[in-house]
Image 1: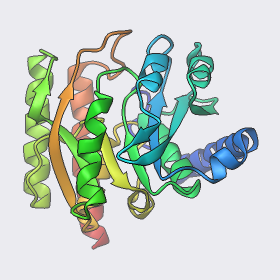
Image 2 (image 1 turned 90 degrees about the horizontal axis):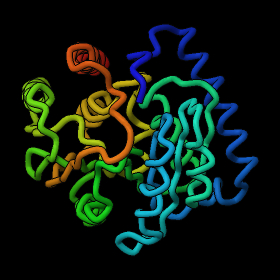
Image 3 (image 1 turned 180 degrees about the vertical axis):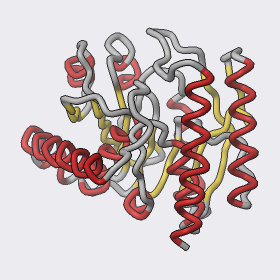
Image 4 (image 1 turned 120 degrees about the horizontal axis):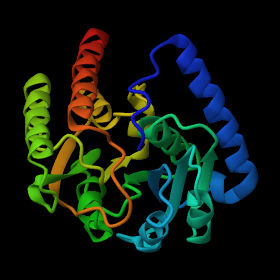
Length: 270
């Protein structure tokens, strides 16, 4: 995803996001009718920005039934200027085409809302670049379906990763330790993109970040007292295109600001 914005930043930004979301939801509902308003129990939400060539195989690799639950595949195209929308549609996804690029956080927040208001009971997120293994989704869902968790995230620390960037590896460890200390719950990976949750969790947590949303969601879920579980996960090398996260230093600074800002916001809320 693009790193154009790290947050909404103002009341005007919130109002702008709401206007964009409302228009996108109206268009989505008009296009898909009952498929948008009466979704199956499980919705897999994918945020995509210029992922032509990658998004199709990702969607096609997702099963239509997982852990006995029928699946809706939702792609929120975050202002894509290539063939992402057409490719996702051709691959069988329900596509919400947002005309402006805001960031992964804004796209996922909209996807959560589409799934939740569409009737899905459970939501899974994965990335559009094919770095996550759909065969691991049942392991994510198991603690939720068994009543042991409300939110489950994969962890490369407990599992494995094919990426060799030492700075990113160190950053993953530093932010996991930081969040563990701030929240009082041991976390080994705060930015793993393959996650599962009860749909209502996404409506209870305050989500403001347009871009670096993974830590905001995780800290918010913990602050609201939801049960969080980590399971081993695998992150593969990206096969098509290049990462849009930006330079390590810039990414790290923005991510750190979101971690600390979200923790302080949630602490003041209580």
